[in-house]
Length: 57
Image (cartoon, rainbow, N blue to C red; front, side, top):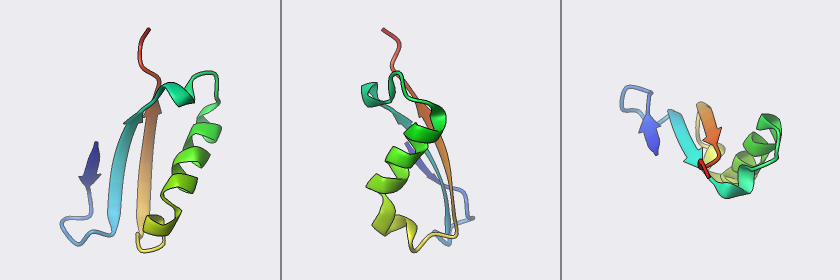
């Protein structure tokens, strides 16, 4: 889920990602994975809030 929290100008986003690939990884590692995957998009953003989770088994 991606939410524009900038008031409509598209400079600040909040993303919620659930992935099995996050299992057994520390939160900092999970966020690094997200940052790497979105590296080009992040360049034009003022800020990004990342929330990651692992699906319940």
